[in-house]
Length: 342
Image (cartoon, rainbow, N blue to C red):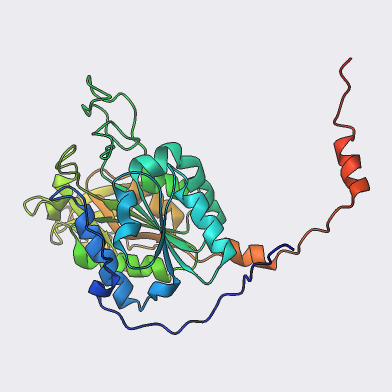
């Protein structure tokens, strides 16, 4: 007798937890100074703040340094195979929509072998949080170039410098119709927790690209964005309904309609005040695409967020197709799209 899965979300009573309650008994084994430690701390703090239930939470990962995450969270977890975390997480959510599902994956795992699965996750809008740890390198397998490595980056697999144009993870997500796209550096603890909570509260796929430092194989990849001496000139925090200004308010972004482009301007010069800056609208996909493609400054925070029906909601509402009888199956097998070989 076949087992029928109950797809009705189960009501649970949230348990009050502290960040330490989300730490498992496993020894955390990343390289000293790895950005993953900061991300783990932020996730544990977020889970406590949003009132998540360990008995109702699942972390799914693929392969790579980031994929160790499920071992370090006191919840259910799946350490799956290379590039397949999105597909397996989709199955978990469809089997039990009441579960709180998080996916943790690196830039290589997500955008190389896992790129196809990630694209379909976005277009389906499965209700889960997807964390992409982007350190622009394959850290676990000793520092080879990844899909996000910049042109010219020297690695064991690109000794003459990478020739490939890097994948812009946030732009790819938007192109695949992701409804929630955010980007945060690993060291920005306060904003990271804030963005993770937003992604969790979003109904649908909440995609968060985390700019993460690999201290061994690609140290300083995002130094311009994270170092105190340069951060203000490179960090553009996007907040819905607020003007896009940075560098302690000395610079802003304005929209140039003739070129459909964003342009940096100096506030107070050429007759341009703060009012000339574009006001961030996280529901506008065109603005989002322009923002994620900026090189300097780097757009951070919630860049795009719109509501849409989730995949599991449509899945549950879809009528089950009638079961064909043997005669119908035989017609399909020997239909007009078959031929005989002599």
